[in-house]
Length: 197
Image (tube, rainbow, N blue to C red; front, side):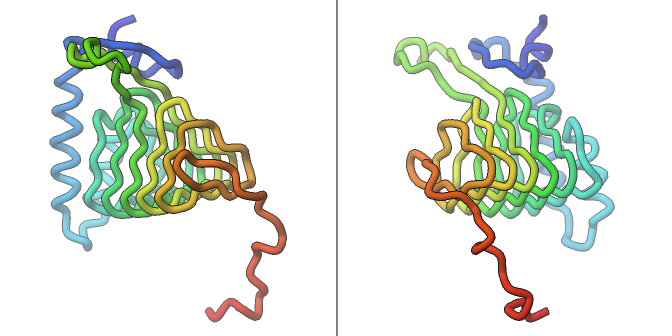
């Protein structure tokens, strides 16, 4: 497999900086630059750029500027995806965002990492692993999700969390490192009379 095939494969890998597909990275930087300079009323232009940038882009994907990613082709949205301001996705591996995802401002989804050994790190040895957000996941503001993590369907990640391990479905999790706090229950639903409009 060549470098792009390895990057698109849903498995962790280790690489050297000299194998970085710079042409694809420059393409993503250009498209992000164009996207981030669109006017709020240029919704069709934004949709067109996202369709070109992302590997799979549901028509129900909305991303607020500023948005940055490494490659774009490794980002896949599978339904409604609300991605708020200042999101960064380091998509050196596949990032799958399930339908009903809410990603708050300042979130970073980082597939990429670096060698722990300082000598290897200084020589550009890096790591990467996929990230999966299952359906109806909400990630709170200024959270970071690390490579290799799957967040289960319906779960909520509290603001400011650092998610280093898988989170099961149907829970509230938060912290540094992120840990399960409790399950989501019927008590978390608003009563109809509490909803103003």
